[in-house]
Image (cartoon, rainbow, N blue to C red; front, side):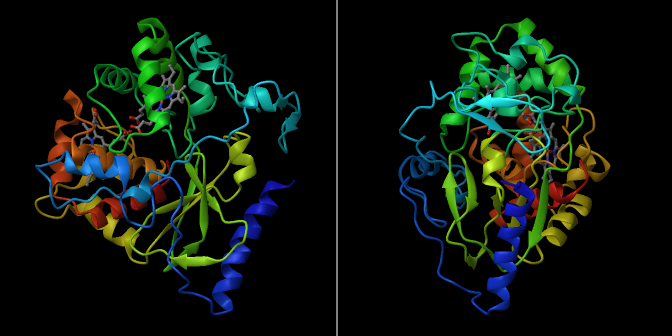
Length: 351
Ligand code: HEC
Ligand code: HEC
């Protein structure tokens, strides 16, 4: 199936329902995993309760979509799948194998270090399976392309020591932590060197609109509800895999769609460029256009939900490595609305 077509279909549906005057539909439906629109339940609630220093801050459950994996394992499914524009074909089993990196465009990068391509059994899953072969990443993990090698090594050390966790426990981050705990220093150094040399492509379009497509959760991302329709965006930042088929094939050329309320990007631009006392300007540390400077990594053009989850983690103390100290002070002065704004603004910039 042509993926651009699917993507246009989703956008056309959105435009169509807006034109038809059905804007302002019902709030998003609760989903079975304990996350519903803006309301925190279960594990997420406990995460809030553990933060006495920031009692007024509510962790946005909608920024941590997750759903139990599908019941039937694909471990021996030999059906070969293809991706438009690629000569490769991979079986369903391969696409579900965390010790395998589906490399649809092997000509687009140099040789992959072994830990990136295959990982090391039994505990070190392949970096490239989750982060994609060129480190473009997916909204549920992180883009690694262009991050300084030293920063990558420091983050792995923080995951390993327990200084860096997710503000809301997620299976995907648990795996990252396990990888960090078991990877050798040599493998980490090679992966860090490799990913730091890659270039991040434009991965997300940020749309300001009072409404967003209705979504469902697939794995760790939002996908358009097959039944279509729209709903109010509210105060959320909703990043959607508009072409869920390509996302599921782990296509690293996919562009995601992020929806935020009108005015969000301008608000974020103001904070990033001028600051908002007592919050210092983000670009003072992250550099002009947030492309990274010194110890502060590049955040331009990266997944806005990833960025938002990190701001939340600095705020709750879930991310508290030695390097996180300046960010802990920065986020203390940011409301959730500010965090959404700076994350959306950063994501809207050229990487
Ligand atoms: C099973 C999936 C998975 C695998 C395999 C994996 N990661 Fe990750 N990684 C994640 C997730 C999820 C996050 C986001 C963590 C968070 O939200 O705090 C992450 C985050 C990171 C970050 C933080 C990026 C940043 O901007 O701070 C680095 C660095 C990283 N991974 C490196 C690696 C390396 C190197 C490997 C291979 C040795 C690897 N990862 C393997 C899932 C994975
Ligand atoms: C005083 C310097 C400083 C300022 C000001 C600052 N940052 Fe940072 N930021 C850092 C450093 C240093 C890190 C790396 C943290 C670490 O090593 O864990 C970082 C990390 C981050 C990360 C995590 C990136 C990743 O790859 O995981 C995000 C997101 C971020 N900053 C956003 C912001 C935003 C938004 C602002 C403005 C509101 C801001 N920062 C202002 C120094 C700063």
